[in-house]
Image (cartoon, rainbow over all chains, first blue to last red; front, side, top):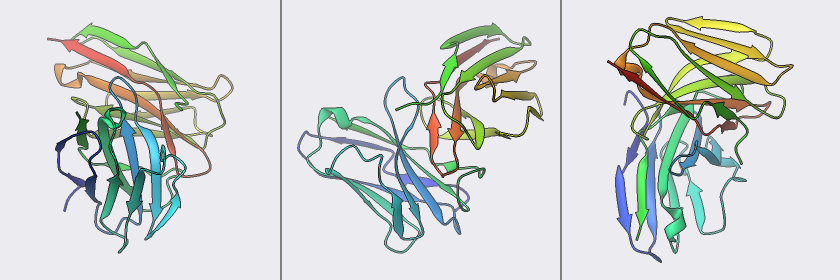
Length: 115
Length: 110
């Protein structure tokens, strides 16, 4: 596609449930990033993939969060035992290579609401 | 944790006026980028300025960078109602991470 796409656009779940958020990066982009944005804040880094491997997952808040990118394209962010504090907009971005100096292209985000 | 801090938090101006937003950061950077966000969703990249650059222009946008003061400014000239959005600065070090500030909410009144 022309840009980064994310599905679903909105997800409402109950506390304790498991959710998966999907990101389709721009075709050919080797780097993929997940960010989380809480209300009134800027995006915060979660995890970065270069190809299929998670090069840096230091931003994941705890072990309930996990992300995969098995074929080096689509990525899925997985959240187990969701908590109300997980409610936020989850943003995915991709770039053609290392981000130092390279623009990141963002998707529209998935708004997660945990009741 | 957030690296940058935008100032002001909110700015309201009339169409045709100029808007200036400032960003301060704490650690050394490779480059600084400005993004726009409408309605709390996807971010749009506006401009990137490298640490060895002092000023950059793109259309109605002008960005300055002062690495000695660890600060940057974004100037939007001849603002339009369509410029209404949140504006974020993001810093990138020698690695790949973008660290965003909290943003400035700009409202341009017709």
